[in-house]
Image: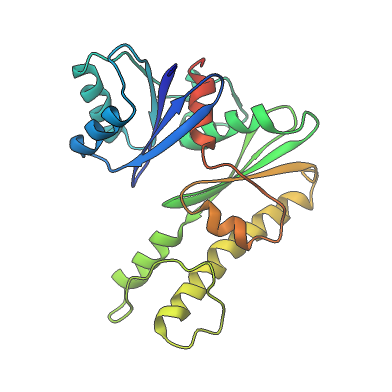
Length: 246
């Protein structure tokens, strides 16, 4: 029996999660603004108007558009829009300035990390974030840098001849032509950035940490990291489920 649908509205896609029991049992990535795709997914999951929805995300316009569409279908909608809506302590001077996706990942991390350990969370989407949650479950901040797609697009947009390329997890330097050279460079930049930050965390008092990886490009990073990591594709959705009381 479906208990709820949780939704993560990102910058490039909208991810629906179907809850069963105390977990997100199934997920679907859908395009933003595509009502036809939403309707097809609604039918595929045989949803009814009485199924509750819990929505959060970093793109307010798309988030509100989906909420309005659901309301027209008669579905009950709960919105998570601020850190105050989450079961999380944010130990920063301006907690309202942190992307809610990062905080939702922290909520999920607190449900799964070892009791005596902190957590490092890598979320690889349009941007890559590497955040730290301490052993008391407090969100302490992190770093943000461009993801694979943004790096590739910026190289194309701000040069005369470089093409847009897709990431290749097998790309290794030296590239023998322009495309593999870009692919190897982007992979090295993103994975190297994550490695550097994780190492910085682990060589300080934050050494006892569980490392989680999520996001659309998470598998590429996880396959290339030298650090042991827990891949968790539904991590943000789990944070929404927990925060919504499901």
